[in-house]
Amino acid sequence: MTIHVLGAGVAGLTTALRLCEAGERVVVHERGTDLSASASWLAGGMLAPFCEASVADDSIVAPGLEGIGFWARVTEVERHGTLVVAGGRDAGDLRQFGARTRSHRSVGADELAGLEPDLAGRFAQALFFEQEAHLDPRRTLASLVRRIEARGGSVRFSEPVEPEAFAGQPVVDCCGLAAALPRLRSVRGEMALVRCPDVTLRRPVRLLHPRWPIYVVPRAGHVFMIGATMVESAAAGPITLRSAVELLTAAFALHPAFAEAEVLEVGSGRRPALPDNLPRVERTASGVAFSGLYRHGFLLSPAFSQLAADMLVGAKELA
Ligand SMILES: Cc1cc2nc3c(=O)[nH]c(=O)nc-3n(C[C@H](O)[C@H](O)[C@H](O)COP(=O)(O)OP(=O)(O)OC[C@H]3O[C@@H](n4cnc5c(N)ncnc54)[C@H](O)[C@@H]3O)c2cc1C
Image (cartoon, rainbow, N blue to C red; front, side, top):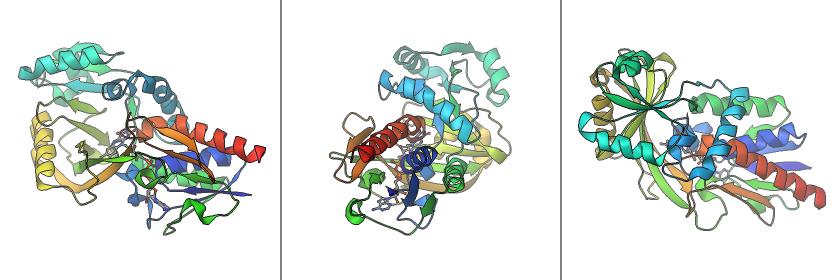
């Protein structure tokens, strides 16, 4: 019997891979023409369980750390930690962030210069979350597709389908915001991709700017993802002028060389979120639904995809 996974975002592809690895026959159906239709395509790729616990809760830390291990066998994972910085006037924000999070240490200007030479002399203090990591989401999604196909599964594009479409066959609904889970809402996130040969960073840097808190995530070839707004809105349109200006201005505040960066892309995605901002896997009439990954799609999908696969295969065996 074939298992049908709906949606080729990070939830659908990780679940499909789990099922393929369990020996199941899997077809992924994606309504977009390629992988870029998903919110996952626009993500920063930070695997930051400790920093993110500041906006979620501590329950994301253990599955988040498990996720870093999963990704290391699927794709290239950069394990250089995260730096959190704030301008001199915002030292209080850095202290507050430190108080809300754990597993970090304070680094002074000299150590910061050793970790990220391009930030030398720019910040007196930073928080260093050494256990955190990051990856390139687009490479990672492509790598998931290759792994699914190598195990006999397939990923089909331009196939919008509903969970009821496969009478009697098991379905995993990973449609992101369109998944059949009650009380899902959209949290819009806008981002920019820039290329800046004059800046070199090894790890994500979060800037606690009072008006425009941003992060900058390095990718290969001096490309940087600058993200991301958090807007409680279901609007799917392009990035607004205001958001573009704020993101790019804040990057410039992190390092003035960003003024000369080439803007490669700006975009906006809709994060699927539930009232407690934690992901959920629930049984449905045709199988299971898995969504609500909010800001933590790459961080938490490894752990929750295992849960989805276990629930589905268990349910199938009972049937
Ligand atoms: C700007 C931004 C930055 C982010 N940064 C990070 C980060 O650094 N780290 C992190 O862990 N997370 C991050 N996130 C969050 C992460 O991207 C989301 O949590 C994640 O993408 C949600 O994955 P998903 O697979 O549930 O949904 P999606 O990625 O949206 O995928 C759902 C897919 O289902 C498809 N679909 C919908 N309906 C149907 C249908 N009827 N039939 C077939 N296909 C259908 C859609 O086209 C889509 O491709 C970020 C998000 C944004 C927007």
